[in-house]
Amino acid sequence: MIKILLHICWIALLTLLTQIGGIVWILSLVLSGILKAKCPVRGLTWFVFISFYLLATFFIVPPLARLSGRVPLPVFENPRLRPENIWFCILNRTYVRPGLRQALEAVAQQMQARFPGAVVWYMDANFPFIDGYPLEPHFSHRDGKKVDLSFYWTENKTSQTVAGNPSPFGYGVFAGPRPGERDYAKACEEKGYWYIGLDGDLAAPFFRAENYTFDAERTSELLRRLAAHPAVSRLLIQPHLKTRLGLAAYDKIRFQGCKAARHDDHVHVELR
Image (cartoon, rainbow, N blue to C red; front, top):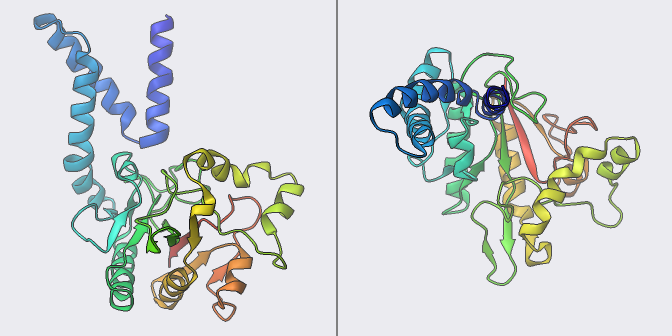
Protein backbone atom coordinates (compact mmCIF):
# COMPACT_ATOMS: atom_id res chain seq x y z
CA MET A 1 0.00 0.00 0.00
CA ILE A 2 2.82 2.38 0.91
CA LYS A 3 4.56 1.59 -2.37
CA ILE A 4 1.39 2.44 -4.30
CA LEU A 5 1.05 5.77 -2.44
CA LEU A 6 4.68 6.61 -3.20
CA HIS A 7 4.09 5.93 -6.89
CA ILE A 8 0.98 8.14 -6.84
CA CYS A 9 2.91 10.98 -5.19
CA TRP A 10 5.77 10.60 -7.68
CA ILE A 11 3.36 10.60 -10.63
CA ALA A 12 1.69 13.74 -9.28
CA LEU A 13 5.04 15.50 -8.84
CA LEU A 14 6.23 14.56 -12.33
CA THR A 15 2.96 15.77 -13.81
CA LEU A 16 3.21 19.05 -11.91
CA LEU A 17 6.80 19.71 -12.97
CA THR A 18 6.85 18.42 -16.55
CA GLN A 19 3.23 17.79 -17.63
CA ILE A 20 4.14 14.53 -19.40
CA GLY A 21 6.33 12.88 -16.75
CA GLY A 22 3.51 11.17 -14.88
CA ILE A 23 2.23 9.42 -17.98
CA VAL A 24 5.75 8.38 -18.95
CA TRP A 25 6.34 6.92 -15.47
CA ILE A 26 3.16 4.83 -15.70
CA LEU A 27 4.15 3.51 -19.10
CA SER A 28 7.66 2.81 -17.80
CA LEU A 29 6.27 0.76 -14.92
CA VAL A 30 4.25 -1.34 -17.34
CA LEU A 31 7.09 -1.81 -19.83
CA SER A 32 9.74 -2.52 -17.20
CA GLY A 33 7.41 -5.04 -15.58
CA ILE A 34 7.23 -6.92 -18.86
CA LEU A 35 11.00 -6.71 -19.39
CA LYS A 36 11.83 -7.81 -15.85
CA ALA A 37 10.07 -11.11 -16.46
CA LYS A 38 12.75 -11.90 -19.04
CA CYS A 39 15.64 -9.77 -17.79
CA PRO A 40 15.52 -8.98 -14.04
CA VAL A 41 18.03 -6.11 -13.98
CA ARG A 42 18.35 -3.73 -11.02
CA GLY A 43 17.30 -0.17 -11.90
CA LEU A 44 15.52 -1.24 -15.08
CA THR A 45 12.46 0.94 -14.36
CA TRP A 46 14.60 4.06 -14.05
CA PHE A 47 16.52 3.22 -17.22
CA VAL A 48 13.28 2.75 -19.15
CA PHE A 49 11.78 5.94 -17.69
CA ILE A 50 14.77 8.18 -18.47
CA SER A 51 15.14 6.76 -21.98
CA PHE A 52 11.45 7.01 -22.78
CA TYR A 53 11.14 10.46 -21.21
CA LEU A 54 14.00 11.94 -23.24
CA LEU A 55 12.68 10.28 -26.40
CA ALA A 56 9.23 11.75 -25.77
CA THR A 57 10.55 15.19 -24.83
CA PHE A 58 12.73 15.73 -27.88
CA PHE A 59 11.02 13.69 -30.60
CA ILE A 60 7.37 12.93 -29.74
CA VAL A 61 6.09 15.98 -27.84
CA PRO A 62 7.23 18.75 -30.28
CA PRO A 63 5.18 17.54 -33.30
CA LEU A 64 2.18 16.79 -31.06
CA ALA A 65 2.41 20.25 -29.49
CA ARG A 66 2.26 21.84 -32.94
CA LEU A 67 -1.15 20.25 -33.41
CA SER A 68 -2.32 22.23 -30.38
CA GLY A 69 -0.80 25.47 -31.66
CA ARG A 70 2.43 25.54 -29.67
CA VAL A 71 6.05 25.21 -30.71
CA PRO A 72 9.23 24.73 -28.67
CA LEU A 73 11.67 27.57 -28.40
CA PRO A 74 14.99 26.75 -30.10
CA VAL A 75 17.46 24.72 -28.09
CA PHE A 76 20.54 24.58 -30.34
CA GLU A 77 19.40 25.70 -33.79
CA ASN A 78 19.39 29.45 -33.12
CA PRO A 79 22.63 30.65 -31.47
CA ARG A 80 21.06 34.05 -30.68
CA LEU A 81 18.00 32.70 -28.82
CA ARG A 82 18.91 30.07 -26.27
CA PRO A 83 17.74 28.54 -22.99
CA GLU A 84 19.21 29.97 -19.82
CA ASN A 85 19.49 26.38 -18.62
CA ILE A 86 18.91 23.16 -20.58
CA TRP A 87 16.68 21.91 -17.77
CA PHE A 88 13.93 24.31 -18.85
CA CYS A 89 13.79 22.34 -22.11
CA ILE A 90 14.11 18.90 -20.53
CA LEU A 91 11.18 19.73 -18.23
CA ASN A 92 9.05 20.77 -21.25
CA ARG A 93 8.58 24.31 -19.96
CA THR A 94 9.64 26.14 -23.15
CA TYR A 95 6.60 25.99 -25.44
CA VAL A 96 4.98 29.10 -26.95
CA ARG A 97 2.63 30.19 -29.71
CA PRO A 98 4.40 30.48 -33.08
CA GLY A 99 3.90 34.25 -33.07
CA LEU A 100 5.81 34.61 -29.82
CA ARG A 101 8.70 32.51 -31.07
CA GLN A 102 8.86 34.62 -34.23
CA ALA A 103 8.87 37.82 -32.17
CA LEU A 104 11.68 36.56 -29.94
CA GLU A 105 13.75 35.47 -32.93
CA ALA A 106 13.29 38.89 -34.53
CA VAL A 107 14.34 40.70 -31.35
CA ALA A 108 17.30 38.33 -30.94
CA GLN A 109 18.44 39.22 -34.44
CA GLN A 110 18.11 42.93 -33.64
CA MET A 111 20.14 42.49 -30.47
CA GLN A 112 22.80 40.69 -32.49
CA ALA A 113 22.98 43.63 -34.90
CA ARG A 114 23.31 46.10 -32.02
CA PHE A 115 25.65 43.99 -29.89
CA PRO A 116 27.53 41.41 -32.00
CA GLY A 117 27.49 38.07 -30.23
CA ALA A 118 24.55 38.99 -28.00
CA VAL A 119 22.18 36.18 -27.00
CA VAL A 120 18.60 36.46 -25.77
CA TRP A 121 18.28 33.97 -22.91
CA TYR A 122 14.87 32.50 -22.17
CA MET A 123 13.64 30.65 -19.09
CA ASP A 124 10.13 29.43 -18.24
CA ALA A 125 7.53 29.74 -21.00
CA ASN A 126 4.62 27.27 -21.08
CA PHE A 127 3.91 23.54 -21.19
CA PRO A 128 3.22 21.97 -24.60
CA PHE A 129 -0.47 21.09 -24.11
CA ILE A 130 -3.81 22.31 -22.74
CA ASP A 131 -4.72 25.97 -22.27
CA GLY A 132 -5.21 26.71 -18.60
CA TYR A 133 -2.81 24.00 -17.43
CA PRO A 134 -0.69 25.60 -14.67
CA LEU A 135 3.06 26.02 -14.95
CA GLU A 136 4.04 26.24 -11.30
CA PRO A 137 5.00 28.50 -9.62
CA HIS A 138 3.80 31.02 -12.21
CA PHE A 139 0.31 32.49 -12.17
CA SER A 140 -0.16 33.15 -15.88
CA HIS A 141 2.07 30.87 -18.01
CA ARG A 142 -0.90 28.79 -19.15
CA ASP A 143 -1.77 29.66 -22.74
CA GLY A 144 1.45 29.61 -24.77
CA LYS A 145 1.63 33.40 -24.79
CA LYS A 146 4.11 34.03 -21.99
CA VAL A 147 7.87 33.69 -21.54
CA ASP A 148 10.47 34.96 -19.09
CA LEU A 149 13.75 36.37 -20.38
CA SER A 150 16.94 36.92 -18.46
CA PHE A 151 18.51 40.31 -17.91
CA TYR A 152 22.15 40.88 -18.85
CA TRP A 153 25.01 40.82 -16.37
CA THR A 154 28.73 41.56 -16.56
CA GLU A 155 31.43 39.75 -14.62
CA ASN A 156 33.47 42.39 -12.80
CA LYS A 157 36.78 40.53 -12.99
CA THR A 158 36.77 40.06 -16.75
CA SER A 159 34.34 42.83 -17.80
CA GLN A 160 32.72 40.22 -20.04
CA THR A 161 28.97 39.70 -20.45
CA VAL A 162 27.87 36.62 -18.53
CA ALA A 163 26.46 33.75 -20.60
CA GLY A 164 22.96 33.80 -19.21
CA ASN A 165 23.14 35.11 -15.67
CA PRO A 166 24.95 34.14 -12.45
CA SER A 167 22.07 32.07 -11.05
CA PRO A 168 22.23 28.32 -11.81
CA PHE A 169 18.49 28.28 -12.49
CA GLY A 170 18.05 31.70 -14.08
CA TYR A 171 15.95 33.42 -11.45
CA GLY A 172 17.01 35.17 -8.25
CA VAL A 173 19.79 37.57 -9.30
CA PHE A 174 18.17 40.92 -8.56
CA ALA A 175 19.00 44.33 -9.99
CA GLY A 176 17.57 45.82 -6.82
CA PRO A 177 16.70 49.43 -6.12
CA ARG A 178 19.49 51.91 -5.54
CA PRO A 179 19.45 54.51 -2.78
CA GLY A 180 16.70 56.97 -3.63
CA GLU A 181 14.71 54.47 -5.71
CA ARG A 182 11.48 53.14 -4.27
CA ASP A 183 11.76 49.53 -3.07
CA TYR A 184 8.51 48.01 -4.33
CA ALA A 185 9.57 44.49 -3.31
CA LYS A 186 10.03 45.56 0.31
CA ALA A 187 6.67 47.32 0.26
CA CYS A 188 5.03 44.14 -1.01
CA GLU A 189 6.72 42.02 1.67
CA GLU A 190 5.43 44.41 4.32
CA LYS A 191 1.92 43.77 3.00
CA GLY A 192 2.37 40.06 3.63
CA TYR A 193 3.66 38.80 0.28
CA TRP A 194 6.65 37.10 1.91
CA TYR A 195 7.43 34.85 -1.06
CA ILE A 196 8.13 37.45 -3.73
CA GLY A 197 11.89 37.38 -3.07
CA LEU A 198 12.16 33.63 -2.48
CA ASP A 199 14.06 33.11 -5.76
CA GLY A 200 16.84 35.29 -4.43
CA ASP A 201 17.13 33.23 -1.24
CA LEU A 202 17.39 30.03 -3.28
CA ALA A 203 20.01 31.45 -5.67
CA ALA A 204 22.16 33.22 -3.05
CA PRO A 205 24.34 30.21 -2.07
CA PHE A 206 25.43 29.70 -5.68
CA PHE A 207 26.93 33.08 -6.59
CA ARG A 208 28.53 36.16 -5.07
CA ALA A 209 26.54 39.25 -5.99
CA GLU A 210 29.56 41.55 -5.62
CA ASN A 211 31.24 39.75 -8.53
CA TYR A 212 28.65 40.89 -11.04
CA THR A 213 27.20 44.13 -12.36
CA PHE A 214 23.80 44.63 -13.95
CA ASP A 215 24.25 45.46 -17.65
CA ALA A 216 21.84 48.35 -17.97
CA GLU A 217 22.74 49.15 -21.58
CA ARG A 218 21.99 45.73 -23.02
CA THR A 219 18.97 45.13 -20.81
CA SER A 220 17.48 48.50 -21.72
CA GLU A 221 17.98 47.78 -25.42
CA LEU A 222 16.32 44.38 -25.05
CA LEU A 223 13.29 45.89 -23.32
CA ARG A 224 12.97 48.64 -25.93
CA ARG A 225 13.11 46.14 -28.78
CA LEU A 226 10.51 43.94 -27.14
CA ALA A 227 8.20 46.87 -26.40
CA ALA A 228 8.48 48.06 -29.99
CA HIS A 229 7.50 44.69 -31.47
CA PRO A 230 3.83 44.71 -32.59
CA ALA A 231 3.22 41.12 -31.48
CA VAL A 232 4.14 41.87 -27.87
CA SER A 233 1.26 43.06 -25.67
CA ARG A 234 3.09 43.86 -22.43
CA LEU A 235 6.27 43.44 -20.41
CA LEU A 236 6.43 43.12 -16.63
CA ILE A 237 9.37 44.44 -14.60
CA GLN A 238 9.92 46.22 -11.29
CA PRO A 239 9.04 49.96 -11.56
CA HIS A 240 12.42 51.15 -10.31
CA LEU A 241 14.05 49.56 -13.38
CA LYS A 242 11.56 51.14 -15.74
CA THR A 243 12.52 54.54 -14.33
CA ARG A 244 16.26 53.86 -14.12
CA LEU A 245 16.48 52.59 -17.69
CA GLY A 246 14.55 55.55 -19.12
CA LEU A 247 11.54 53.51 -20.24
CA ALA A 248 8.78 55.68 -18.78
CA ALA A 249 7.33 56.40 -22.25
CA TYR A 250 6.66 52.70 -22.96
CA ASP A 251 3.10 51.91 -21.87
CA LYS A 252 3.63 48.21 -22.57
CA ILE A 253 6.16 48.03 -19.72
CA ARG A 254 4.28 47.62 -16.43
CA PHE A 255 4.57 46.58 -12.80
CA GLN A 256 3.50 42.98 -12.13
CA GLY A 257 2.05 43.87 -8.72
CA CYS A 258 2.66 42.25 -5.36
CA LYS A 259 0.98 38.92 -6.02
CA ALA A 260 3.68 37.65 -8.39
CA ALA A 261 7.38 37.23 -7.64
CA ARG A 262 9.54 40.32 -8.02
CA HIS A 263 10.65 41.09 -11.57
CA ASP A 264 14.03 42.77 -11.23
CA ASP A 265 15.78 39.50 -12.12
CA HIS A 266 13.95 38.91 -15.41
CA VAL A 267 11.34 40.35 -17.75
CA HIS A 268 7.98 38.67 -18.33
CA VAL A 269 6.91 38.92 -21.99
CA GLU A 270 3.36 38.41 -23.29
CA LEU A 271 2.06 37.85 -26.81
CA ARG A 272 -1.06 39.72 -27.99
